[in-house]
Length: 488
Ligand code: HEM
Image 1 (cartoon, helix red, strand yellow):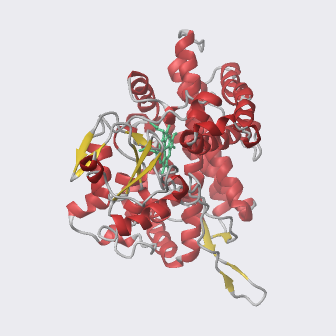
Image 2 (cartoon, rainbow, N blue to C red; image 1 turned 30 degrees about the vertical axis):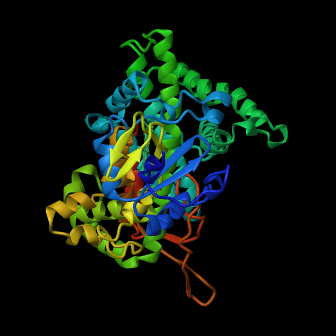
């Protein structure tokens, strides 16, 4: 027994009985794990009752375990609060590794993978041009516009439902579900560590879970019923649900079990797909306010390739390498999702001098990987040139943000190519149309916003003000012209 203990990875000493339970925090857990790493190395092990948690802080460790050994590191935990009490067990991020997982992956890859990207281009273009129009009209509400853009894009993709409303009821319901499911997985930690907590009435776990359960009809069935009642159209037929469920005449042509599975898959895509998009666009704006030279350099490249009498398109991408460097640096510097949900190890394993036990919950720390000083010198600096100036192909391959920002191995984000496509169009179009700068005080001095982030599952910048102004007189007419040619 002594030998087994000695071969576990190191970690902070826990308390008697409680173990490391008091070391956990819902606020910026990734930063705490990264700080522990300075003393313990890139693998940090915590234990609470029957729970074994392993933070992986380096590109080497995540690649070796979560990626190369993905066949045994791709299961998920059975969260009591989310799966048992609230009834959220059917959402994709909670699916156990096995046949159901494989089928869901196949369906998501079919709808969102590389080969499906072209199909989504008209919808992404339309939503982007609407976003530009919103930013032109009400530049101070950039966060509201990013939320409408991301929400409408996901609902269009998933259900064929497009909205121009800033307070669309389907988006409101989907956001409510996203908050509830994130909380269910967060609170599940404490209920899983201390199973008795669920029976203490004043803590309210059972009551909250029962409220959530009673809303499943609104969160899961309502958008699906809306999809079924939409008039037949190309948008509906081509959507995620349409593609998987409808025959050529627009009728549902699958059995009830498949229909139920697709319904849950559809609901699952909203949270991971929309918040990450909002966060990435907001991080771009924050980074540009602080780095005007980056915006100027990008605008110069965009102007030389696109000119001044049209908006960027995907065909311009090969000639706009600096925009690609900015996308990589936004994902690296901002880290929209700093930690993976735990990947559960399904059998005992050995790595380096460590023995890892079956059931260990392995968490990839993307923030730590993307701030690794060996790969990214001066990691706190927003510096897109780091990707442009690196000439060694092997180092460039290791530095590629896509290796880390979207998670790892078999659980890697199924929406990553879709996200990359939409980020290219929004980033290049925003920079082509607008100057972005700090607001100024009464004496004209710039007020730079703080670089501060919320500490939850998604790394939202704290709300900030900035000035977003059209670069030229013809920006409005360009946007209008683009909108009229990208009608859905
Ligand atoms: C900048 C944009 C995005 C980022 C940074 C991002 C990042 C991530 C990360 C880190 C994970 C966890 C992977 C792991 O456990 O190893 C994940 C999972 C997931 N993402 Fe994304 N994502 C983005 C956009 C999207 C989009 C647009 C969609 C869908 C349209 C999407 C759908 C999902 C789903 C369904 C999962 C759960 C996969 C599973 O548990 O098997 N994501 N994403």
